[in-house]
Image (cartoon, rainbow, N blue to C red; front, side):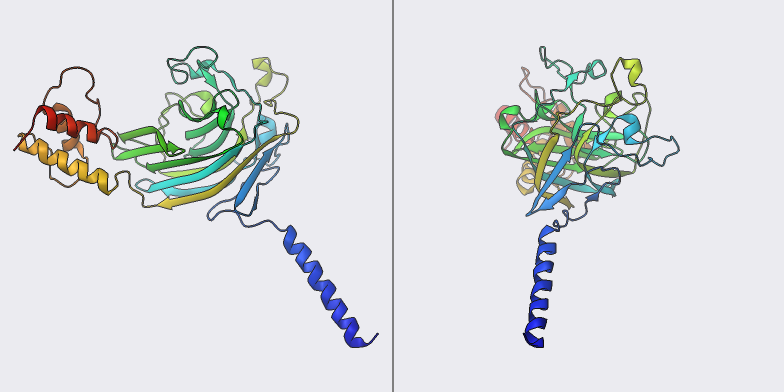
Length: 352
């Protein structure tokens, strides 16, 4: 065999090895997201799908670094997440968007949480009254200790839910489901938030400080009665099963860990995108507000300039300009109720 043939074979072997190596390297994670330093098992992204897996008692011994001497293993927390870091600040308008796939075999049922009384299961009967989950699959938090603001939770009894609203139920396990949260981060009444699942709005609030946790109780990593005013916000995506902390014996538990099914929990997510500069009111919504402002001003009520912006004057005029009989008139002016309010005024109090 000539030298040329030997060199050709060596080159071929090298390229073959390179091909194998390249084939085993996972794709980069979605832009702006990275593996969290407390992951015992990092998520893997391939062909646009990120797979997260957590296992019973498989935790991180890396110290939190805040002087408390605690770790995930010490507290019983198990996680596999991607983190964006503190990228958003007060005044930013952002949409967090992704699709979620929960396996049909997922079996964590959650539990009845006395701390959740008054927050969860409103109007529900057992077993959903005060039914809560220690498993969060997305979260938004401030930089202070116990400063979680919003969580997307999951269990096999309720499915996925945000605050007390169902995102998708257990009947949709084994299928892809979409999630979107649009928000204006604010510490005053200029804040707004709109959450939609599978194209349907499940939570909408306007005119509020969105840097305050609406469901502040211990299990949500929030301290009731303690005022915190974060100015920047961290987004984390992926499963975190919270444990019982160092006082687990006090609660009569066998360990600090929340039990996870033996084969572990697997979640898949895709189409993960974070867009800035979003708006709650689209062009059609702003046109409705303009028409409402013009109508209210024509009635002699001061709704402010006809600019399509639902400011304080517009909101007050819409709710106080005239009285409506019955209880069908909306209590608040929002992007969803504006068409109903405009229609009510046009029907009951028309103008030329």
